[in-house]
Image (cartoon, rainbow, N blue to C red; front, side, top):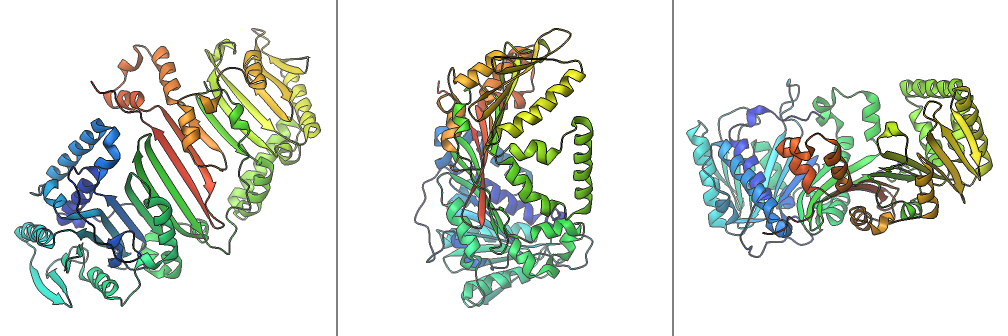
Length: 548
């Protein structure tokens, strides 16, 4: 989809965007009871039709999340004040906090208000629960007053308990409507047609998105977690059920890209700030008739427990052979992709005299890990850094046959290849220093940049990853079982940069230095979330700043 909304939403839209941002970024007052409709976690979705392609919500209580990081809360509040000031509107965050509920919701209700226009004009609804109908009504009156000062004309209407103020001039997408739904909700839309759909849902004449099983699953899995700051829901099912409404958004996408969206039902994301730091969670739900996950199995999780705790970067996965076989038939349906794969296979055979799939990938049927870590014994050109690759296999004979062929190729290229005590070393002919060292430890093939690193992995020497910070927190906090990990030891990377950069971190820009000094680690994993859904989670650990 196109990522930019029409600039014609100014100036009222800027105000509403700033309102949403301010509710997300800061609030320091106690809250009263929130009106909850039966069965609805997000009350404002009682105004959003089930066909809405996009729903966003923002928490109004970030101070609860940031209680362990008061300096970051102060920074967010500063950004909020700046955002409000840039709109030129005379609204304070405190005014909105006096009546706003627990979250602010924005939804795209109509994909395009002007079919055939040069740029799509989405119909957008902004909604919130109100804890004080008088104060929220006064706020909407202020919004209309400032819009009127810029040329907008409003007409008051009553529709079965809903008080409307409809702008009578302006183009589609900039004819604003404010609405008060009794003492429950307030809403603003950028077109009367949008508000009419919201009213129909409110009256029970149309289904709300809260009745969608996919939406409720996403909210239950992602939003109902502590420290939620924001939530986004992309309704791909709406695209598939009414493709004509999205034609103007999809005209730049090729058929292959559109086809790849067919198995998707929804994509939801949530941002949480918790004691450990920032957690981003994603849930993708798919059509039950499709096998997007291809029957993939989760990793046993044994290999990562034997990796060294001083690793700077770690990538783990499993079943390369099975996954390659599972995805190839689908990938090769795309002629350009199929051609690229055939070129890859031909080039690999020409360079190694091996078949990529039969001789190499076929025996990679267990867990696998790739890591980067300090290695004082590695080749001098690596400047104290090393790497390791660990592959588990149930087909050691086939693996050894491929490795023997690679040894021959290395020797033909002038690399010294020696074997002693089950350890094979590739040595640089110029310095006669090891380039790669490999050995078997049970069913694990271990390839490293030095003998010392090989012994550390094979004998599990030193502090291991699950017991060593900051990787320990990432390992403990990310969901299990999963398909594998990507972990960054930002604390260790910071130490390396401090030692290698001229002038250390002080030579960096303040923003980059702040990022490098506050973050300790980063981890990502994906995991199954039911028969027809899978999740992805990212965790950025940010320790609290010591109080002076």
